[in-house]
Image (cartoon, rainbow, N blue to C red; front, side, top):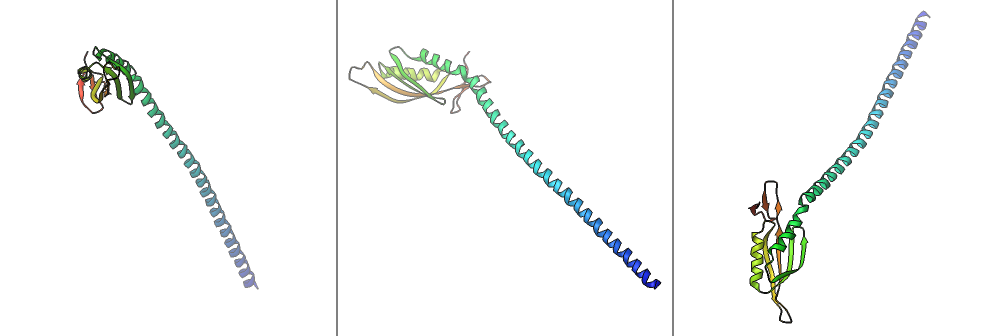
Length: 179
């Protein structure tokens, strides 16, 4: 009988140890799952923060690009004044302009000249200018009906001043800036 009681006691102790080990392992697994869930939640939160940082970085790049455009416009603001002043000074006697339009850095110049030699002189003046480069004649039309001269259309590129004191045309030709 003592053997049966000893066996029962040993079996009870073994069962209690097994239940204790099972509960302890379950608690460890539950704690690990809770830590894993907390890590997953933190990863989701960090992913959201990374997305916010990326969107802020994109906004920053857009703002920087806008600031560069504004800065470029600020630097080039006096250029158009010089271009218009140069046009007025370059037009030969016996000629006048009827239209000047600009698309980007390309100017389209329309006018009337008494002769085609005055158009040629105007083109030479443009070529010698520091503010306009690459004159290209599109058309010279002689109209007979009550006309005082030849209508002409020509194109020229607006030069831009770089910090080094050199005028660069959009096609890459370089000239020294006249004082």
